[in-house]
Image 1: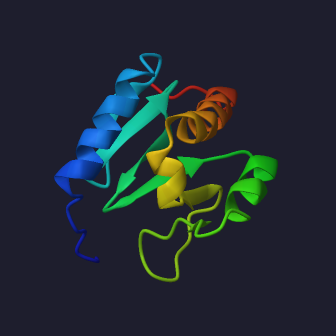
Image 2: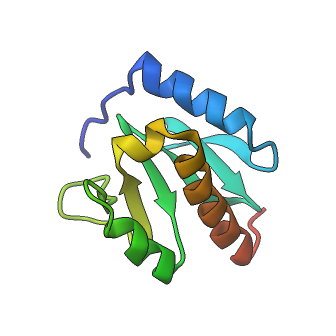
Image 3: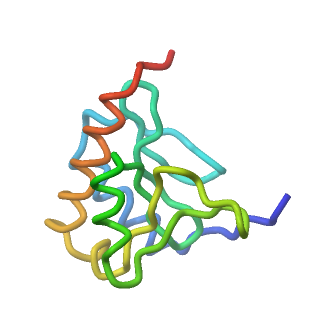
Length: 115
């Protein structure tokens, strides 16, 4: 199992500020990092210094076309299907980030609810 690095205090603080704008999402931990869930489904969260989102296929393709975006691979060579890492410039921009989170929340809400 790879050793997961802790996110910086700045990334954690950014996550907390953004998460507060989305009270419909439940805060939990995933991989030991802060995450947001909709209907029991993991929608978005941190992984070390990166922000990851779970998206519908068309949204995923659009996200992966962004400069510096990438498939989410918590372990090298093992990309999680349906997930992307967001570029730092998107994470730093409230409106851009919220637009991607809206898509991630909508996709998570479209999945069967988990208990």
